[in-house]
Image: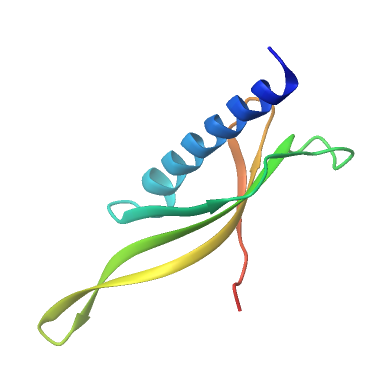
Length: 98
C-alpha cells in the first residue's frame, strides 16, 4: 500500500472515529452535520501523548424553547482532535471561531 493510500485510509478512519465521538460522547441525541475536515497531521516531536491530529468544523442542531414553541437552532463548532497510534481520540479541543 502506498503512503498516499495509507494516509487516505487513516483520514477516513479518523472521520468515522470523530463522528462516533461527537454523537456518542459530546453531543448525544443531537443532529450532527460535518462541514469540513483539515488534513490528518502526524505529530513529529510533540511527545508521546498523541500521534496525529485533525481539524474539523461541524454543525450541531439542537432545539431552543421560545415560550411554548421549540425551534431548531444550529451552532457551528471548530475542534481539533488528537489521536493515539491506535486512532482513538485522546483529546478534543474546541477552538473559538471569533
